[in-house]
Length: 453
Image 1 (cartoon, rainbow, N blue to C red):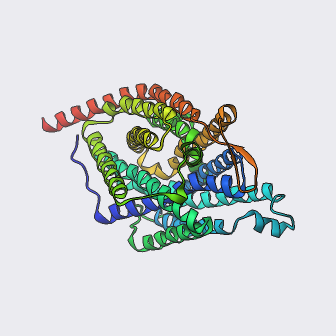
Image 2 (cartoon, rainbow, N blue to C red; image 1 turned 120 degrees about the horizontal axis):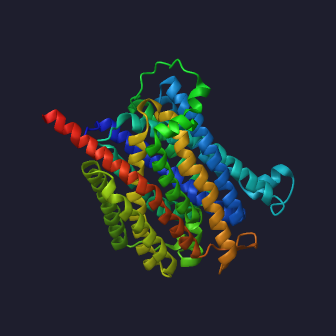
Image 3 (cartoon, one colour; image 1 turned 120 degrees about the vertical axis):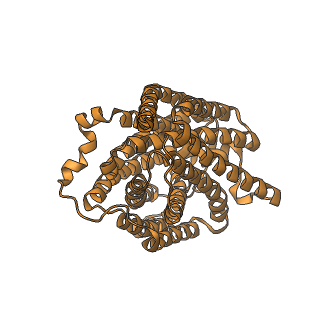
């Protein structure tokens, strides 16, 4: 393997800053928007599935169009920074959504305003997704592909893979406690301000990875580039990587939209009465620190030894964690199972994300972000939550009475078995990718041998 290229301090700072704040915003959207709709607004698991599906379609369309536009305009920075600033404002808007407010506008009582309020939440989630996908999914991800190469991508992905874990821990504890203490509106305003400030900071710290000289190409031609049969045949390894990523994402989306609801109403975790002792806080910091160090180390090992040796074991680790979560009945056992799931998910994410970047044509990074989103967001977020909702309606063993005295089903542990059944299917595209990785390694060794000769 060639010596790894180094990223500058400014690049690392922006990767961490924008990556982390983006993951915090997505973590709140993917989890607490669901609990907000479920607990506060009074929506059902079907409403959650509809919201997730709608936002995923918006995410894909936005990333495809705005990613291609960033390629054509040969700019990333304006989309990243401007998008984050606007993203924060759309998050803050959720502070003003309630049945009472919508009912007051429509001239009806809060009970009758349920369907209208659910529709407003879904619309605003789609608008927020448009801003987030423009800045994070399209521009920021393309920017990372621009500034990395095959010698440092897995390590970079290892760094990025730790951010969702860190964001999830902070969101689970901080947002949960703050929402219980101060209410959702205060939390939405606070988070929105942080995201907007992130975009403002980026105006002074982000260095554009492209020249800024507009490309003389037809926009529509660039837009459909990744869907052409000839392109798919030429870049088969890229689409195999995306297929593997898609299977992983479907598995995760079966339970992720319902995870906090499950933890609250099945495991019995009360976010409003968390007893966080100094010992627990120190342990949590050590665990998170260990996860970060392990992810970066695994990324470095993948860059050094190739992707192949880590592929199949990561699938089995994730599957084992999901199966064990089905049997976990207490918070401690569920937390242990969650660590196994996170380890398997993290390994697969680092592995496949690096592979996707490796096989993406260098001058088409923006255009291919939309194709990437179809596989890892739209299809999974349509199929996964629908499967999770169907499993909930079929196997629900508990009900919950929301703030409006309406009875709704609580997601059962069977959602983890369904996720495991899907996750194991990732082995199929990985088998074909193994051949490609081994061939690439042989080609690199041959090239090095020729250079030495």
